[in-house]
Amino acid sequence: MTSIAVAAPNRLATDAALAVAHAGGSAVDASIAAVMVAYVTEPGIVSALGGAFVNVWAADGSPVVIDGNCEMPGHGLPRERFGEGLREMSLNYAGGITVYGGAGSAATPGSFAAFALARERFGQASLADVLAPAVAAARDGFELGSAAGSYLQLVGDPLYAFDPVTREAHFEDGAPLGPGDTMTNSDLADTLETIGRRGFSTLYDGDLADAVAEHVQREGGLLTRADLAAYTATARPANRTRLGRWDIATNPPPSIGGPVLTTMLRMLAETGTDPAALIDVQTRVLRYREAHLDTAVDLAAAGTALLNGATDDARAALSTSADTVQVSVVDATGTACSITSSAGYSSGVTVPGTGLILNNCLGEPELNRLGLHALPPGTRIASNMAPTTARSDDGGLLAIGSPGADRITSALMQVMGRYCLADADLQEGIDAPRLHVQLVGDREVVQHEPDPAIEAALVGRDAVAHPPRAMYFGGVGAAYRSGDGTLFAAADPRRAAATAVG
Image (cartoon, rainbow, N blue to C red; front, side, top):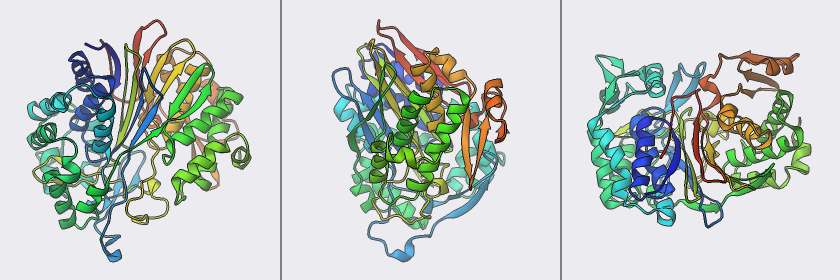
């Protein structure tokens, strides 16, 4: 039995992590079990056919990040197929956004490949045992939480109604399901049981690969059997930086989120964490990102240039999914695991007979700055995800991360700045009011929660006030083991979440 602390999107997910750990699974097994339950119980917020990054800092090793982010599909297809299969949709979400759904919005999914590699290196339990809680939730039913239920009601009509299989699963009496409604998904339960027997690889070289690719092709999308067969997860050394007494390990290039977060933290170490400094650091780093990363063809090179120049050339140049889930786990033996997973806003398309909904990572304009379907097949899609682990000089251990699109990095930099630099209590650091600098052309608009210190720093600036603890500002989840072995977890009141220690 392994004792762990876990922060996850809901109680079923934390229960899954505890059950797997208590049965002898590792922190990585427990983290994957929690994410798989979230794939079942947080419809719309996330789904299994998306991407994920797995950050693991084992007790006896160096931190590593496994990249299972989505890729541009289309291997072997004629160029005239690109641009097809997309549905433009206006969603009443986050103040109103335009995204693209349909089978043409689906990128090659990588989360299962990342989990397979993570378990190969760090797993201890059987895959069937890791997936058992997710199978039970799908087959026995679960109550929709506030985040998933509210999202379905906001976007259900445009996004979940055009596909008959998706509509049948998410509507009742002509209306989208909402918070408190009960859902089951027997097809998904069957699929997960099959994966438990055959392995995650069945999505890439087995019957599940055939089912997914054939349906996407029938519906006019780009994803092919060749794309799935060619996909590989990649393990890379984590990008590391010092923040006070903490050694921080986060997502390396070609992720955008990791280099941006690292640069923000390095600058915070010099400027401090008062609101004026937070605004200044975010503005400078996000302007650099806009100019040098968002339209970069080679994200690895662009991210590395930012990291290498964060205190020199890039410092001078810093001109002054929706829908993602986070699971953070630390165990008593000294291993930390942080997983962030996203499927975009959802394509709205379900692969018949599987219960699996395709991602829409090709249909998110903010992740496709070069244009829709513009990347060469096999190219990793841009990502804001930044799962993070850290060790302190006194033996502390931290796993932390957040959903929230481009607010991921700004949320994490504020929480980690308060916790690692200002020595705030971890939960208090998460609860504290936040701000986010939004770039609107040549203007910077500071989105913020109510707080006198923030408001004093906004004099003369464009600003938009939000209610306290607004979902817009992310949903940081953290698990912690102190130097003396005490386990603790903290979750963000801005999103439905749960913590557990045991």
